[in-house]
Image 1 (tube, rainbow, N blue to C red):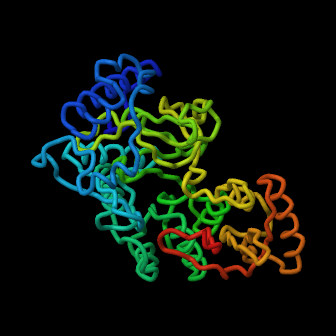
Image 2: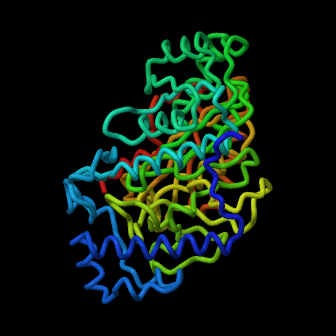
Amino acid sequence: MSKTFMPKIRTERELKRTQLEGLQWTVNHVYKNSEFYQNKFDEAGVKPNHIKSLKDISKLPFTTSKDLQEGYPFPLRSVPFEKIVRIHASSGTTGKRKVLCYTQKDINDWANMFARCYEMAGLTTKDRVQVAVGYGVWTAGVGFQLGVERLGAMAIPIGPGNIDMQCQFLEDFQSTVLCSTASMGILMAEEVEKRGLRQKIALKKLIMGSERSSDAQRKKMKELLGVDHVFDIPGLTELYGPGTGLDCIYHEGIHYWADYYILEILNPETLQPVPPGEIGEMVITTLRKEAAPLVRYRTRDLTKLIPKRCSCGSILPMHDRLLGRSDDMFIIRAVNIYPGQIDHILSNTKGVGSEYQIHLDRKEDGKDYMTIKVERTERGNPAEDPAIAKGLEEEIKKQILVSGKVEIVDYGALPRSERKSKRVFDNRGI
């Protein structure tokens, strides 16, 4: 029998027991070994022996990205330097980068989590996985590769960009899986179509992460690449990296590895739990991480728990795809808007493609205006643009409660990216 990376946990009771043991271990570990966490706990008036049940997690203080930046270069460190075998850093562009330390056990755990992602996606040792994400100090490339090798499949570590080589590798090596950002996935899909490679490649699955993807993008990738499945892989540098969950072949939600971390969904303003099925901020507490554990880390990512068991029967719970980040939110005419809300409306509209931009401007009258540029579908009729634009404007007003002008532009008019696509252009100078 081949090795499985799925947990041996069979019931919710077992899962909760595993989580409580991990929570108590983490709290004891950080209080004993991290001056940062010891001070945090002391300020909050909480000691490790106060954590007797999972509900007691609410007694613990929050950790934020600001804590990581202020603790630079080795924030949250909870082991001696001799035990640290690697560091990774976030790709953030503001302030100091968030740097995370790893012990060998952390690396092994991460590899096993990632291999579990591939296993859930139905990969086997016969698969050939083209890793088209960034290598370097980021967690992406090395994480995707680590998981492929742990599973025992063939890794093709090409990195992002270089479309000619990507297409050549797809054809020559007969890659069966492509790992990329959603933006890169769209770019590759369009190139495969343009070059007439569809019948010459063996691609069956696309695994994408690093940015939010829309239903329209997924549909387009499936059509142009001829793949059976497009999977969504979440993850952030602070929590090992990508590979901390995956939607299975039923695509009913993203299974997250609840035996490795606790996920709370909290109201970003009140920091109280929201009911299952309601949107809130993802707050993470690790259960096994040694070098830089997270205790109630505010990710700023927004999603909701899916309060049902998946059709696949897995005991592992699910959250929805990411709506966006609480700090991606923009305010126009006193209304809070997330790009994901507009993305959702566009994805459900016939006649428009998956590429769009949101432009915010302040005119001479002192008022703010929103313009949404969205591409027409490849074979769309320009004569239908006015009717589609009008319909979209009405739907945006109805669902988001703010007016916006919609401009339909030609297919291929908006820039493609090999990494992440910029969606919001705020020209208001605020």
